[in-house]
Structures are given as C-alpha cells and as structure tokens.
Length: 406
Image (cartoon, rainbow, N blue to C red; front, side, top):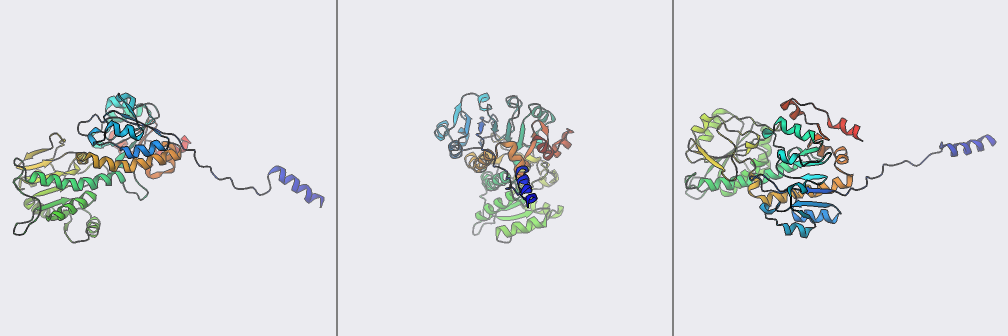
C-alpha cells in the first residue's frame, strides 16, 4: 500500500500521469502593409484592388498605400480610395514602401530596385517576355515573388486565369464584331445571323474557358461556330457546359484549313500549361482566308497560335497581312479595366485577409499549397522548375525552403 501511494506521488511530480493534449495555437493575425503603385505600362489599365475591397481591408486594421492616379484608368478616383481608407502617396517609390506589393504588369527594372529585402511581390509573370536578367535582378533583391497566372485554388484550377479568360472570351467576340464592320479593316459585315442572310462563320481554336465564353457570345448573336482542340475530353466538356450541340473537331490539317478558308472570324485561344504555346497555324493557311476576315490571337501572350501573329497594343491593336486583320493584344482584359479590376479584387480581397490571419505570406505558403504553386522566387531563391530550365538558373524546391525557414 505504501509503495502504491509513493508511486502516485512520484508520477504526479514527474509528469507520468495522463496529461491534456497540447493543441497548436492559431497564428496571431498580422497587420499587413499593402502597396499598390500606378502601372507604368501604357498597355495596362487594371488595378488589383478596387475601393470596396480596400475598405474591407482597412476595417480589418490593414494599411493600404496607393500611388495617386493608380486607379484612374480603371475609373476609380483618388477620392474613392481615400474615402475607403487608403493612404494616397504622391511618388512611385512611396507605394513600394510596403510589405506586400500588389501590381498587375511585371515590374520594370527600375521598379525592382525599389523592392526591399524580404518583401512580397504579386504580379503577372508573362514568362515569354521575361529574360534571365529579370530573374537575377529579382533574386538579388531577396524578395518573394508570386505570379497571378500560377496561383491555384483548392480545386487545382487557376482562379485568376479563369476570371480573366471569362472576360476575354466575351470581349473577343465584341472586338471581332467591331472589326468585321470596320470601314478600313473589315468588309461591312455584322456578326451574327439573320433571316435570309448567311450566318457569320466563327472558328475557335481551343476548348478552354476563353472558348466557352466566346462561343456563348457568338451563339447568342446567331453566328455559326466551329471549335477545334487536341483533346476529345475538352471538346466533350465544352458541349456539356454549353448545353447544346455545336461543330467540334480535333486538330486535323485538312479539316482546319477548310474551316479557316470559309471563316469570317478566328479566335485562337489555345492555352499552354507550360506557359509557351506552339505556333501551329502556318502562313500558308492565312493566305487562303477571306479578305477582311478577322483573327484574334488570344494566345499571343504565350507566343501565339498563328505564324503571322505578332504582339500589338491597345493604342495600335490591329494590322493586316494577306488581307486578313490580326488583333494580337496580349492583355485583352485590360480593354475593360473596370470589370477586370473588380474580378481581380474579388480574389485578392479575401486572399489578403487569409494571409493576415495566417501571420504573413511565408506562413500562408506553408499552410496553403495552392497559393504556394504561384511562387517562383522565395526570399531570393528560384523555386520554379520551368524558369530554371528555360534560363539555366539554379533551383531549390519551395517545400524544402519552407521547412528550413520555420
């Protein structure tokens, strides 16, 4: 009896009795300082946060620094942002004095020099237009950089790419309608179909999100649509999403050439997961197209689908070659910046709140593998395998870096 009593006393002192399980405590929310500089590119009109999202973030205790005029091309005034709780700064450099820099177009060389060490950059990457020097300069600044087009959601899809693709699909058909009836670049044709008049023939290359929304717009106007893709699965899924039967085909040179010859509009929207599309429509096919036909090469930001395509801009969006009008603006969504900015803001408003609740960007990358997919540089170290191979740069895997970081 004495032995058992002594054991209880001993075990209680040394912790041998059953103890309550210690659960991990929730990370204390972090106050974010978010900088939004004005876009220097004349071809970029969007902004990542609209005033309503800024108001929500400000109410949560975060500081938002916005360069004056940053929202004007999206039709949001300085006063709109000031009323929402943002701090309006006069200089470009002041907008970079933040922990998180949120912009749309990739930073220019002079902007990279404004980035402080261990800051986080969210922007479009647009890999085909980047250089080895660009990544070396970013890495030298010891920043963490995430690309809009690589960020995933919990379903594995690309939410920002999808949002812009939905807008681009609709906008592409409106642009096509504009140039079909243009006195210089078109043939006075109205896009659609009417009693007694032949329907406009629209060919769409690719069966992704851009294709879906372009097809919906074309069918709504009464046009005849043909969709081509290399994947039967994607073509079948497109049919199911549309809820009606349309002409679809896999890529076959003779079939696609026949379709291009009779087409009034061609939308090239073949997305390449690796970021660089393969040009597979040769110039010889373009020569056979109708005079006044319109090509909208949505894939131009990944290199383009047509051999005759070359990048244009919103100031000079089109050119004619072999009598065919080419529209090859890389960021078509920037043509409707108010709408596109609202779509961006829907995503980033909630993401920034999540980042704050997780205790910062680094903590969020560890807990949110979908967000981590968008990271191509972590604290100055390249983590993207595709960039490493393309530019022969040293690579380290993000998972290992995060494990060592914490």
